[in-house]
Structure formats: C-alpha cells, structure tokens
Image (cartoon, rainbow, N blue to C red; front, side, top):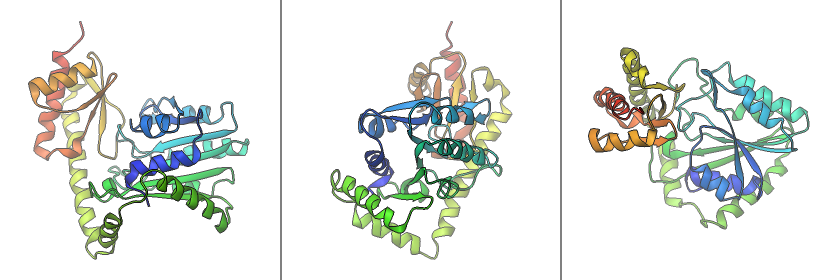
Length: 314
C-alpha cells in the first residue's frame, strides 16, 4: 500500500532504478516520470516513438530492449496519459513476445506497469485487462511490477491510496518477502506511512454491495463523453486542416497533433479568447474530454480549431 499512484511509481523506481541507469518509455509519457524517475533516481528516460502509423510501435520497444546492456527497466502506461491509448487485443501478445525475446537473449528485465487508468477502456477491440497477467509467468528473467491507484480506477480523488504488486516466473513465495521489505523501506524512508483512514474508506467501498453498480455508472458516463468526441471529430472533417488526433480508445484524454501552430501559443489563445483550458507540449495539446459535460465537448473542440486558425504560423 502506498500514498497514491505517484508514490507507488516513486517506490518502484527507488527499488529497481539505480543512479545513472536508463528507463525505457514510449515517447508519450506522464510528465511526472521526470520527477519520480529521472530526478528522483538520477536516471534518464530513453524514449521510442509511441506510434508507428496508427499502431503501437512494437518494433521501437523491441529495439530498446535488445540494445546494449544486460539490465533493462521499462515503464508502460496503458491506458496512456497523455494519449488515451491502450493496446489493442492483437497488439498485446506482440508486446509480450518482444519482452520474451529479450529475456530469452539474456536481458534481465523489470517491467513497471503504470495501470492508473485500468478499466477505462471504451472500444471493443482494445485490451480490457492489464499486461500483468500475461507477463507474470513469462520468464525468470522478467520481473513485473503492477502499479495501481484508487484515484482514477475508483473515482476517489484526494484519498491517495496506491498499490504495488510483484510477479516473476518460478519465484518461490519466500522471494517476495525481500521485495515487500524493500518496498516498505522505501515508503518508510520517504513518507513514513500511507493513510490508514483512506485505506479504510477504500476498503469499505470495495465491500459495499453497490460498489460495482456505482462504478459502472461512472464508466458509462465517461464512455458517453468518449463517444461524443468520436462523433464530433467525424462530423467535422474540417478540423483535420488544423490538427489530427493521435490514436485513442481509453482513459481520460486524447492528444491533438497540430499541423500549423505552436501548441503553447494555442494554449494561451484558448485561455485568453475562448476561456478553454488544455495542456500543451511541443506540437501536441492534451484534451481532457472526461472533465466536460456532453453538451460542452463540441464547443470545446471547436474552440481548439478556432484558436489553431488564429495562431497559424505564416
């Protein structure tokens, strides 16, 4: 148990990432990894392009895993922040296979699975489960660490309850005690302990007879907002003159890749002229559709389109 998912990432990184080491990540990643992993562990994030066309860039991951060096640490976040993309059902076994290939070639691999948005998958062809089950018994050379948080998975902002779970093929029960002790030490040496009150409240929710019904209702609300984004983009082909969405099928967000404008300039224009807030980085803007009522989604995306036109580079 940790104090939220951010603390869980920090604990896992403290356990498995040494100073000066490299951590493999898709190019689109949660910016807090810069603090929890890069700065927190004096490590560097080694990136590969997230997508190859409309597919996850499996060959990019393979290349990083097979690069020089015996130890490999990789962090995978599905559904992904910022893109709102999760692996499709046919892609997941291919990701598992490249990890198996690297392990069979002697790589010692730690796979950190940031499952912050676990369960928030909105399309039928998308993977509905975590990679954890597929990797847990993959190879003695693969240690998989599942990182969860109640915040997004159970809609309990502010309670700060997180989880870290370990698995490796052939590991005896006694092998996990040292890992548990190291995790407890990392927690004790940073925040002392996670909130017992928050843990008790989350546990009480899990034990409620209406828990799943309430959770399903929230999921359906978010899915309606996701479907509204899809409808709006399909109804307005002119939007593609200014931006295109990166692949998205899950989670809280999607990313628009701008064609003719600087994202930071567009962000400021949206605030000043259109009273619309987004996150900008490079040529990308992140749009949190889950935060908007259905009726506000089309106006918000239209505002993004208008701001992009206003800020077009000559």
